[in-house]
Image (cartoon, rainbow, N blue to C red; front, side, top):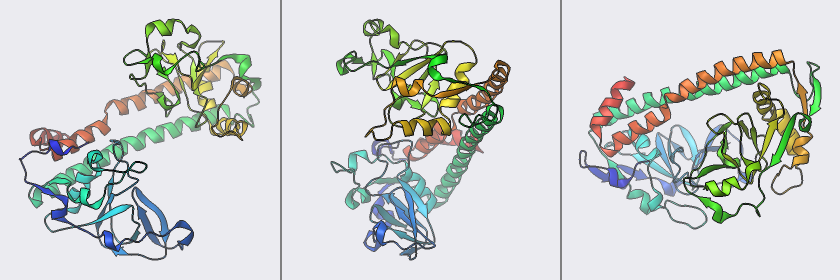
Length: 394
C-alpha cells in the first residue's frame, strides 16, 4: 500500500484537488426499494450495486470510496474507473480528471492508496471530501503517465490470467472428483455408506476453560481457527499462538499429518488437510479435528467431500436455528460418507497431486506480489526499481 511519506521529489507532487474536479454535488442516492430496474449501472463505494432506469453521468470518471470502502486492506482497491451512462450514489467520490492527468494513471495511483490516516468515523470509516482533496499525487509528464498506466495494465492482466488459471484448475479438480466418485448424497456409484464417526476420530477444539486469551503469545506454536482456513489452505497468524509449555498440556489438540481440520462455526465446509508443514500445530477452539483411522489416501478424499456443496448444505441445515452456525461432534460424526474402492482413491490422489503441483507452480510465481511491487515502485518514485520490473513485463 502506498503511503504519503513514500512519495519522493523525483516527480512534482500535487494534491488530488488540483488535478481533478469533484462532481460529488451531482450524486444522488436511491434506496433499494425505490430503484427501478433498467440498463444503466448504479455504482457505490466498491463497484456496481445495481442496474437502474436512469443515469446522472455519461463520461469517463474515477470513483473513489468515500465511506464503506476497503480502507486498510492491501488486497482490495478503493478506486475504480467507469465510463458511459451511469448512476453514482453518495458513498463514492466522483472525480473528473483534468487535462494534466491521464485517467488510467489516476485510477492506478488511487486504487491502492493508503488513506487510513485520513479516514474518520467510529462505526463506518469515511474519507471525506476535504481529506480526499488533500491526497498527494506524484505527477510525471503526461506521456510518462500513459506509459506507466499501460505497463501496470499489462502487469495486472497477467496477474488476472494467473488467478483465472488457478480457478480453472480448481474447477477441473472438482469435476474429476464428481466423475470418479459421484455426488456424495445420491451416491450414483453405489459405494458402501458409513457415518464419518465409523472411519475417523473426531475431536472438538479446546474449550474456553482450557485455553484463555492470556495464553496467546506471539511467535509460538500456531493456533488454527476458522479464519486461518482460506480456500482449502491454512494461513497461520503467528501473533496468535501458544507457548510450548501450554501446548504440552493439551496433547489431544495437536495436529498430525493426514488430519483434516474443519471450521465448526461460521461458513460451513471450510477444511484443510494437515501436511508436513502444519504437522505439530494446534487446533483452535473454533475448529475440530477429523483423524481417519486408516492413514493414506482417504484424507484427501474426505477433505474434498466435506468441502463439497452437497455436504456443506447438509451441515448448514443441521445448524438451522442457531444465531451463529456451530458444529458439534454429533453433527459431524453423523455425516454419511460413501467409501470408494481403494484403487479409485489412489488414482484420484495421483491426479490431485499433479494438479496441486500445477497450482503451486503458478502461485510460486507470486504475480500478485509482483504487481503490487511494480505499483509501489511507480508511485513511491523508485524508478530504477520500476524500470527493472517493467522490463520483465515487457
